Image (cartoon, rainbow, N blue to C red; front, side, top):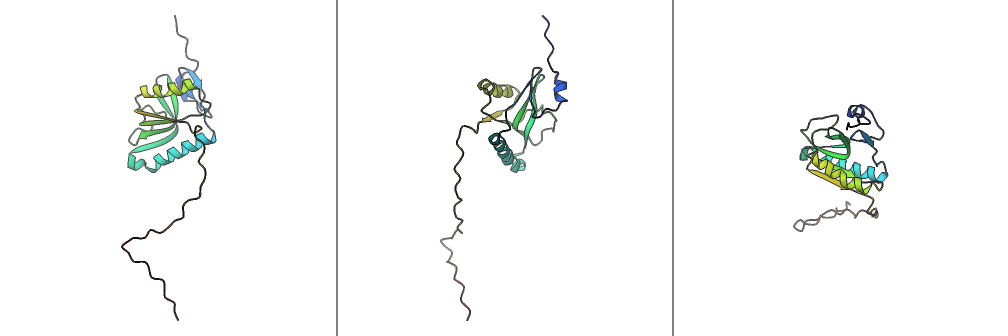
Length: 164
């Protein structure tokens, strides 16, 4: 029995811009969830922390990155942590050090379970999924007053003398 050709070739997918970007799985397009405030904020914060430490950690943080996990599958990682010396590929074929997936309430349970295993088979050592919607937002509090530390061995400063 002959196999039906894919609905969309991978070459067509790779040369087409989608807004927002979509996953490519065995000739089919899969929409992604995201774009909500919590999702975007967490994504930005995670990328920011890794970007601050790029030189120190030898890693390169990128967001919304297409990662080719097989000859017929391309996934978009919310935040991918690449080795600093990894090639700069338009579609990453080199396995990232870490893929961070920020889950949305709209993500189906089956896709949440399947996505990490597919990425792990690609040879990437770590996958982290975070769902910001489970926790209540923190209650804002005023920062503690800044106090100048005093040393127990140093004498207290003398008050300025009054000029007469």
